[in-house]
Image (tube, rainbow, N blue to C red):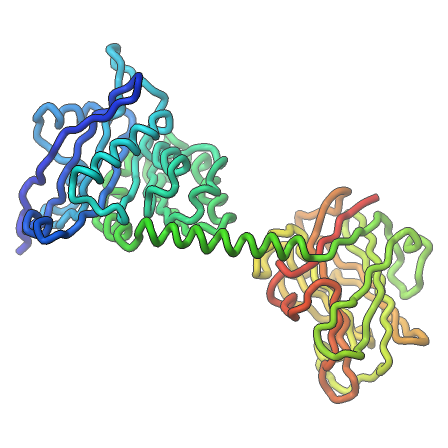
Length: 445
């Protein structure tokens, strides 16, 4: 049988700016032998809890001696609530209206209150968490964006803000809660926050509920509190450094990748060089991946609304076919990343297209192989490839658009396998798996 734990000890404190006083409750953990554990040197995690509109009335009542606790009504009486809870009450004017426009406007005071708690109480500076509901959900976003280095993880519920500034908290674990039928803060306004964080590579989880606006029970549940304790401020800071190092390497890689242009024009894909190709500039596969004397190509690019066109003039001293596997035959491989997300994974907008010297086609990724049109013609020094690579559904070629692109020449040198590879951009033979190694092509008139 579970044992009901005693009501935790509470303290009232305040901090000031020149214009505003912020009062707050500091609630000690509800746990067995808490005092003994503190005497033994144990430090306690801190949960900063930001209330929603109207929540100040309840907190102010507690400050004046009313019965109640902060957030404990949402967990079982036997649950050892391991946090020092810092619960500020948003200041009001004499007419009862709030004295500031939400938590973001007094983020400095919230942090000042946190510093007081860290100095005065047995608080663990490495385990500080921030969460809130409704106006407090918005405040969670706002305060964390202004002070991302102060928190280990976030739990915003039923709140929203603009996506600007989210890159500052992309290193923080975030668990977002929202009701699908929320009539106060519409779900469609909050969902872009999660989408943007996912784009930034954040560790973000979205949990939705079929109901409406009230979600305090969900955000302050035992499961949520246990989840928070997996994270530390130092751990999140280390993740921020790792992400910055990774992004710095990506920026350096991006700067090192070759650039080229595709000119507007629509050729006939028949292996003949139409006059429309004359204005396009030659690019070359001069990056040696494997095989010192293997086949290479000069190539040009054109575009229209529906296709990216490739003309590749391949020089191949050993024009043979000694294997039935298209991937190992003499061939030209073309890689596209129409969205240029720079991710190391093939997703929407990416594709690998291959055509062999015998005009056999294959590919990889979310491609449209049935719309991949090719023509191959032998020449005195090798073979000529002309190809039309389709833009994917929902994508149209347009002037000024920049896409990721790579072209490789594979050489079967007579031993039944691909022995030589020459590339335009990728020196590590990773284009088949990682679109971030592609070069850049700008569509121009």
